[in-house]
Length: 436
Image (cartoon, rainbow, N blue to C red; front, side, top):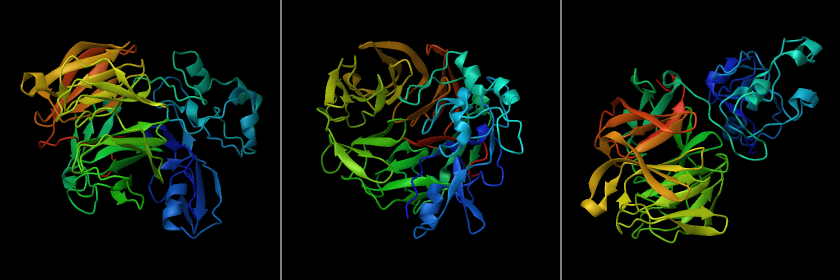
């Protein structure tokens, strides 16, 4: 039986204590609900995989304890509540927050507990300052009806990024402040499993799509292993394609690629099935995908060497202002202010020279807002807190772009080097000891 994994996955920096049934014995992650089966604790995902015939597993709220990771308040030792828990009815916890992955423990829908033996909320509990209440006094916004969130500052020293290059055995864990780079052990069916694959998060899990080893494959990172799923992409996407998390990371959009011809087609993966959606108007080989005004967007093309930008809405792809250069091989990153950055790439109006430019599309206008320290192309970027971490291919440079709270570019610094010329490495934010 498939148990739908619709309950919150909690990263380790938000966990104060595992409790007796908080951490899954399969994937080693903490979830909002778990089941006890055969003396072990399982999340819904691992239960479905390990015991597909079981129909009786009972999932109950975790007894793990949680804290505010951003130190925006002193909240700690907090409980998570589920829809089945009557404590949701207390006045100060009027909003049920599910399937929302924001940076603070407000999404735990909790109160600051004093561990009452009868599991009730006292008057004292109600007068304490919860993390949720603290957040209401700041500029942080979130909603259970929309996916609009505001990132909180996450210090680079607290950031750790798993990097999976095309040689899977050379995967490593990079710290955000550049103080460490440690070899990580990732298992896959072959060493080239991630070569030219696109990647995105779906329901909190890292997925990779297509690539040289198998153009229709979809694989999920479970613990430290890339497990190939039975569901396939609808089309062969061997290279040059892109993927993007959409709809609050509940789905992934996969577009473009090469399969004898350069593709314009797109499809959507929801964790179990793939369905085709609108094809783009232009080819976007090495054009990437990013969010502009919360809509998937692509820019430029390697083979047609055009400047075209277009965005996908519920009615199809529509044109955006052309980029000032005939560009490809860049990285696209959406910001919370609804703008989108274009980082690095090749300038085909200048012989395909590698670029260091950082461009911003905002209010339908392109503006150059800064430069990388080294020209770069075919790299990967990830936005964490108020910093973008860019991993260059030929340059090998790992650069951090720091932004102000209003998302103005503040500084660019080099925090390390990749150990090889890894193009489009897979990036995944995780914890400091992941798979080492």
